[in-house]
Length: 310
Image 1: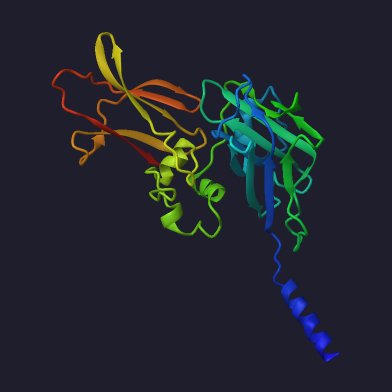
Image 2: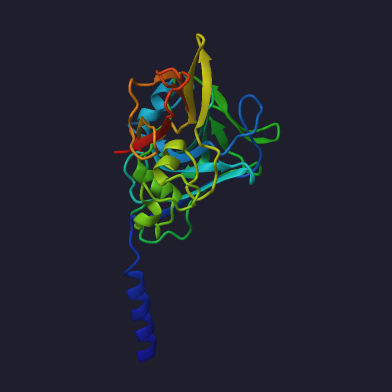
């Protein structure tokens, strides 16, 4: 009897360390994903899991209000090579909009392009778990696949003509923003999030020459080497004069300010003066043109973008 009692005490001691308030959440899709024009979704599509505060009910008529009412638990980039998105996060509270009885949504949206592309999905089986329960047997897994039913969309389509997810073009509606801290949580493991050499704004964990603050601003994957987001420099002819013009894709989610700097020697940079002309600033695309024309004998000029985040 003494041995049995000892085992019982060990089990009880183990259970006492299980804490309420932390429940793992996962969300993913599988299958073809298309934009409204029939083209395939790219890696610049983000799928966030979350909800809307204050009892807000999203409709196709009030899309301009969504971002202000949306609260995200996390986001995941679409993976074109695998035809899916896959994300994981931790729910720590049942505060609005994550109440046990409140609706779970997956909001997908594209970064870049002449118009916004959105899809908002819910399912009758999706519900937030109770974070006050000390032990959750299995983590909630919100999936979008052709094999499941119960989906409805506010905008966009699910399981239509063999396409798992298809977005819809929307206008005059901002996408939700995400802080740098929240972006770190989305993109790095918990074990990495306390290491400034990995998650610091000037760190470059994938070694592609773009620091984390640039990856955050451009909406790219900080763990995947890519030069796709590198800004493009062109010489444009305007009224018989030549001007340097910079085109870049940026993330509307990022809470950043950007300043364009200039240098003649790559050593000393100063803010571009006079200020550049904004040629285009749409959903994820920014085109800036130097106000100073290029003439024969003009000194060479290098450009650098400086991003800062609160």
